[in-house]
Length: 224
Ligand code: SAH
Image 1 (cartoon, rainbow, N blue to C red):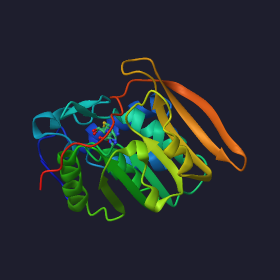
Image 2: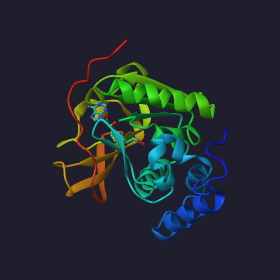
Image 3: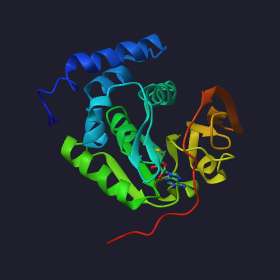
Image 4: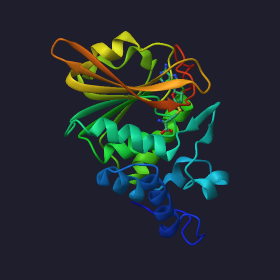
């Protein structure tokens, strides 16, 4: 991976190590997840003006009223997603900055990620190229509909909160696959769910209370 803003200290190895310690304190146990977070330069996923805060365990604005998720949440969702074993295909709904997708790309075979704001998608694509991440496929669409073309997925991660679990996402889950999704009205009282598809249905587990931006309908106008 290329290095950015070297020498200004805030992106130093020690700063990143502090974040890893914090995540461990918060209960993240997966070594592969912690290693992926350690080796991923989060500061290139935010505006340069916010780079000094990139290794704090906090969500940050990425424009268009959206946010890059808190590292703890990224770690937790990824850890739960991976706990069922090795994953070949994973779908992410809500590419945003691309940070979650970049973490996933280091841990699964192929990442498919969809985003409704075209400008964010273009920035994310540049970042993946810069980092040499080649196993992420992107699409500008309404993620409530999933991405049927490549279904079924071994895992689906949704990084914006709908009021209810979209049916299309349940349908695009492979048997044995897991859907990690925050559900609830926008604000603080959303619940993070882990839903596993079984041979004869779905098994739901409640993980914790979370706060995500809302999953909206439709997509913005593409600017070509
Ligand atoms: N995973 C992102 C988090 C971004 S915030 C990251 O690591 O940075 C959630 C994102 O979901 C926003 O970019 C928002 O535009 C997007 N989003 C909201 N509703 C959507 C929908 N219906 N389809 C696709 N993306 C959606």
